[in-house]
Length: 267
Length: 324
Image (cartoon, rainbow over all chains, first blue to last red; front, top):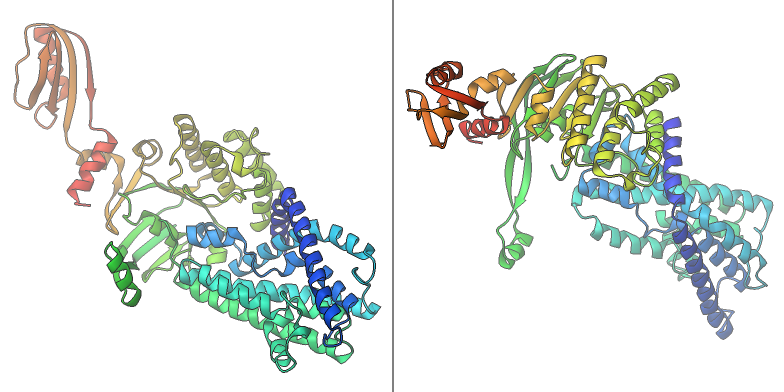
């Protein structure tokens, strides 16, 4: 286990080196969060009855989403891993007494965690102090806060295990771009990254909610703002766990199959 | 002990002719051709041996290394290294080997080299004491103390290669695979790397398999050569054997005073002006010492030098001989 931890630490260290990028990211996320709030303000002013969420609840959703962006952004892929396959340096990774799937999984987690560590604190701090209804509210209850924590970890792992499928696909397709773009759009949209899932048409929601994408950022955010309660919380967590195990299983199978006929590129 | 028996591996390569029309056509119908990268390769390498693996580009050198390091699964054949099949028990196997691919890097790009070393220590579960000892030794022998705190991306090629080699040896592997370890290095770094490899082989008894295009590497390092071409082993023998196979013609350059030289059986004079002469001597007909003795009897020889065919030329003639 220690080797995976050290691996995580090294990846974190290299992630933490890019401070300018972190500041730029923080600025972008403030701007983005602010713009979303203004946009929804316009909707709410025209007709607040037709919308499924109170405005201050939505504000919390948006700020949390911005603060945790690095954990859940589907469009981010670790260049190291993509290059490793297309340039063939995966050869070295296969020379390590480690399981490649776990190694990549850890790498992926580490990059995202290092980014979120650098960025979330300033955003959360400012968001907490913003005046109502624009600021970030505390979780609806202590229990909800705790469930949010668990769901956050699960949701993060679900996202990573999903992006692992795309990394593994690079073994099959030489350039991963096509699959990547398809996957990014699907995930961002269906995970509630663009608009929260409760804003989707009523009839569509049950379907989206059972898809793996809703088990990513949507689950912890809805628990935090109290949109899921009681038994629903348990059901959400369970569904997350199920998707996580399924995605890891599929990823591992595909990887094993790919490695059996791997062709290392470039001599 | 490394045993390779009848290893074959082929790749399927998509092919098309150049041009727009062909490119569009290949969208619908792709043509594949099979490249036989390895064709019935068999050889055995004993513990503590140092073997040079040579052959032209695309001969199958790297593929063989990849099979032996467990990355590539061959289509058929058997390979046993310390009693294990690399691609079947990859994780156990790679614990005992060190690999350097000269054209790739195993160091983490953004962090100081020492951090990469620490990580490798944890990955291979090297006990602290052994790690300290190995690290000290490698730093000293490869002269790394100045660069070990620099991120890998800021190192020159020569510095990086020295670190790469150190990184491959931190876990005291029993076998070291070096795939073009001196590629692109300057003379000083090359010599440093070479003498280090030799030392590891002698002192630690590390088995070394080395691919290279640099014949000086081979001459300096290895006793035994495997020549591969078109996926087949063409020659397995010592350097001397290789030299014997090479042509017996040597070049003799002379500076002398006295009567002009005359050609004799086995001697071809290229030039002879103002006391400077150059000639080709077929040592199968007349030995160099005989010839010089003959000349000094008639003329006053002031200076001479004898050159045999260089390793490079020898390898080229071998490639020609085997039509690869």
